[in-house]
Image (cartoon, rainbow, N blue to C red; front, top):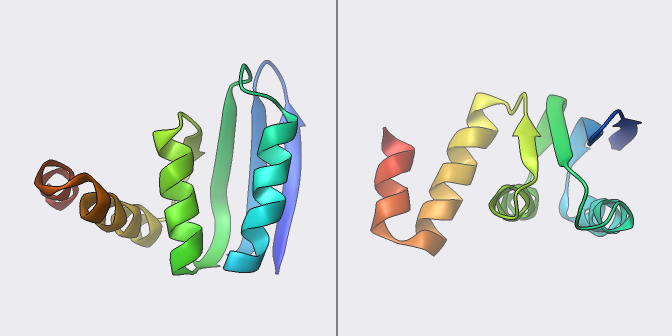
Length: 98
């Protein structure tokens, strides 16, 4: 189960807790859209315990779209790097190994 808290102080930070699954992505997209394109947004992943592949793809897309991922667990960061490498070609794949 995913818990989402929103804080705003010059930028918007969504603190995510628990598991992020494919069924949570639509709700997260809706929340991100509500804040608009001109808002600085971050996702704080400190209390995330588990993600699935769809969630990792979503997080990679968020980061590519200039949403900052804060306190990203190492296994999620590594997985995002691998997923980005598959889509971005050899250059991104090499970067994720280093």
